[in-house]
Length: 112
Ligand code: AMP
Image (cartoon, rainbow, N blue to C red; front, side, top):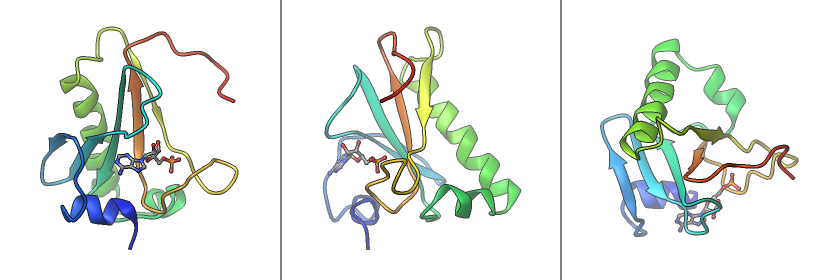
């Protein structure tokens, strides 16, 4: 069981930004931008490839929910970045798929 399973089960507290039947969104404990929220699907996939192999309806529901959370966070007008760190080289540290939503400042590119 990962840290994010425990946050989803409310066994570990988190600063929850949004929740519906599809996703849970909570503020990152180590924010890298003025707004840094993680969005996890309630259906668990570990890696991006697992998610990409899922039912298209589930894929659509999750992606739409990520966009909705960004909008609810007030990031729609100025923009934001969505990041899926994946696997070792992608620096994925929690084996539960999560979208990072970063915004609130002009982000640099390329990432490190
Ligand atoms: P990743 O490196 O893509 O796997 O992202 C994991 C993210 O989870 C990091 O940005 C961490 O800062 C964040 N994180 C770790 N523990 C917690 C926690 N207890 N609550 C919220 N975010 C966390």
